[in-house]
Amino acid sequence: MVPDVSTGDRTRGLLSYLFGPGRRDEHTDPHIVAAFAMPGITDPGRVRLEEHQDALTELARYLDQPVELRRQRTGKNVPQHVWHCPVRTAPGDRYLTDAEWAEVARRVVHATGIAPHGDDSGCRWIAVRHAEDHIHIMATSVREDGRRPRNKRDGQRAQAECRKIEVELGLRRLRSGDGTAPKTPTGAEVAKAERQGRKTTSRQWLREHAYAAAAAARDEHEYFAVLTALGIKVQKRLGPETGDTTGYSLAAPGDTDARNEPVYYAGSSLAPDLSLNRLRERFAPAPTDTAVTATVRARTRGAKSDAWRRAESELRSTHAFLLGPEGGQDQEAFDRRVQAQAAAFAELLHNTAATAPKAARAELHAAAAAFGRANRSAIRAEHQSAYALRQAGKELIRAVGGEDGSAVVSLLATAVYVLIALDHWHQQRGHEQQAAAAQQALAHLQNAYQRTARPELARLTDRTPGPDEIRRLAAVVQAAVPAHAQRILTDPAWPALATTLAQAESAGTPPRHALTAAAEQRELDSADHPAEVLTWRLRHTTAQQTAARTRAATTRTRHATTTRTPPTTTPPAIQRPTDTVHRKR
Image (cartoon, rainbow, N blue to C red; front, side, top):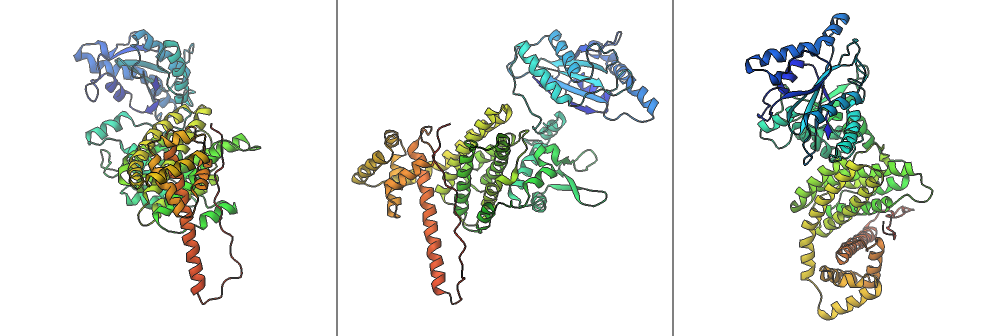
């Protein structure tokens, strides 16, 4: 059961909609099912057609009487005095009678503070039913005693009451929210999008593009520049004294009102974490942790395949961290860091969707959009702790050249593990909506992985060594990972793994050592295709070793040919964090 509280200032206008045919003639038999004590008032849904408009006007005047009296007493108009709360059952729920809907309405106005039980001075309200699956509760938010109602947090209170009603009436129990969900499009926004032939509303379109811009940008100036380049109008709010930017609003291209003016949405109204203050937390400069800053500064603008491998390495470190707090670490501090990793992972998904091979982009865009809900919770993120992952994600946008297919697949495979861990974290903490969103994102991410992995596995399979070499490598598997050997050798991806082991050996790594190290990176018990998992781990490690040897050879060549005096000291090599063996969750 879903309530949706909003406010307005046109009593008569809302009544015309509630008792009218609907925007698409979807309203059937509009009538009042419950109301405050109002003897003698005519139900506009139960009069003859020629009396309908007069009945609407009479009802509007009656509901507005306390509002008008307050206006006369104070000499000021009452802002947003129309309180509106549709309540809808979930698809598949049983039919509710008028009497049941009446009880739902009375409980909602009581829970929200609009008209508490036994309070004769509460606000005037009615509940209108014009469809089988929902009602509209409408009130004028001035009490009979002239005061405004105490209805702070009315949306959350309505949600909480609906969760109780679902249990008592045997309805589908929806997931509880935590106040971090973005504002849903209004009926008017949806209708406008349909008239213009668009699949999404301007609010939704702006939200997704704002997230993508934030993922790519390094600071707020670049954020606004990216949005402007997309044709989005940016309106900044400036402080009256300092002239500094204190907020912003966005308008989609071509989205105008009746006066042909752009329709602006504040960043915070698109999503809580798109407010300027929240964005500035993510755009904060590098942390003081010297290990992190040194790692990030060591990166240079290089090949796109290198950027994918660096991002995959950061994801592996993130996955190791997500497996649980280390001894002595405060649980609250751990959760703040996990929330930061989730936010950085959301950015990486957006950047991956923009730069991945075309075959996987649609699924990755869908995964990024779905994960947007899993990215937000009531836990305040410690964004500096995820600085390295965030910067690695931004490198994907700025890298040059073509990507290596195996590097992309390796990153997507690790991203699947990270997403599973984040889903588990949300479930442990009762974040029902976030966990559901993570599972939706996971389905899209797995599809994207399959779209990129299949051609790479086929290419490796086509290069499988001869029968004698296969038997020798199978013996290596039996010796290196005996607990998983049977599953590995019967996995359809075994020929691809055999090719990868042979390539690692040609590159100078004994296959048994390579296989043992790959198996120790993470547990294999939960892997449906262990040979496939090991293939991507081995290819990632081999690519790293080859790149390291290439850099070392280049450095030696430069030292041998330079005529300048070499520096007296050489900075230490940056050590990447290594994965360790973790028990299965």
